[in-house]
Length: 148
Image (cartoon, rainbow, N blue to C red; front, top):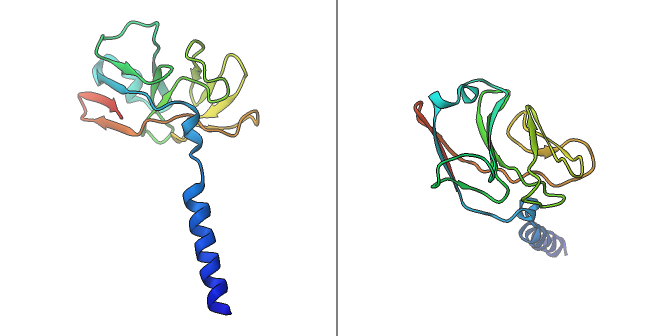
């Protein structure tokens, strides 16, 4: 009887583990490609600073800016991070998040997200869904490249 209980708990745990949805899926996974010289953006050398790439901004034509644009930033520990500028609440491409490090704020719903440690977790209670983060960031010293 004890073996059955243990087996049942293991099977139930596996079902729960593999059926959980990824909260990041609220923002569609879109192509990202940005390659910029570190020297062009001194902000990216300093912790707690960001550079924003919006669809209506000036950038090379080969850049791919995710779903709603992207922000590349250095968190409080000096690690590079990158997030999509679309809010998971309204999923609008037309109203990008406003970045004032260490926070990203939605101009429509007021949701606020923490970028202090590159997590994108919500901090104001109006949403439970984190930002879509892009993790494939390469820093060669001369260039910073973000892809997915």
